[in-house]
Image 1 (cartoon, helix red, strand yellow):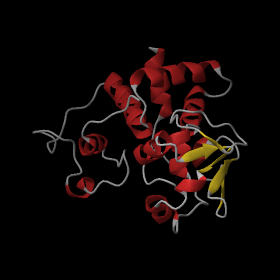
Image 2 (spheres, helix red, strand yellow; image 1 turned 60 degrees about the horizontal axis):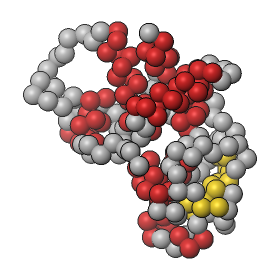
Image 3 (cartoon, helix red, strand yellow; image 1 turned 120 degrees about the vertical axis):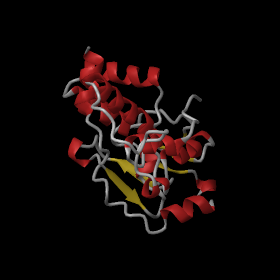
Image 4 (cartoon, helix red, strand yellow; image 1 turned 45 degrees about the horizontal axis):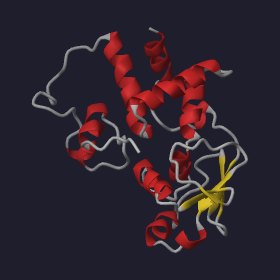
Length: 201
């Protein structure tokens, strides 16, 4: 399974945001990496700004270039605003749903849980992180995995009301994907219109 395995703090510092989850290094060095990272940099070109926004989205959701482009092309053919549809499709990925439900602390951890067959969709084990969850489907923890300490610790006290498109059932340790999220409900600081403009060039 292809995924980014390079230095994560460097990426977080490049964008000045906790791309991969909480990152202590940002509180100490909240400036780009490199010898001149703390110096005032020259103004970026329009293309560089658009490219950076695409890279931020890719790193945030853990998607590599070919997969991301395929998702964009699919969004461009769908009804609705292309940028919003792209984000909705990214939010519908199984690893992201597992992360949003609070079962895992990061998307990378969620991807690992899915790959190791700890997650079920409508009662069936699904080990493909990029699986697209459809509205109405139920995502939960596999019965024999509910006792895992890492999952129990993460779910303890997690606020499941943060995302109105998901409905959590504490008894079954599962969540229902009610509908695709509205753009205003997606907390990621991504300027999706810049991504659309980049791919439209």
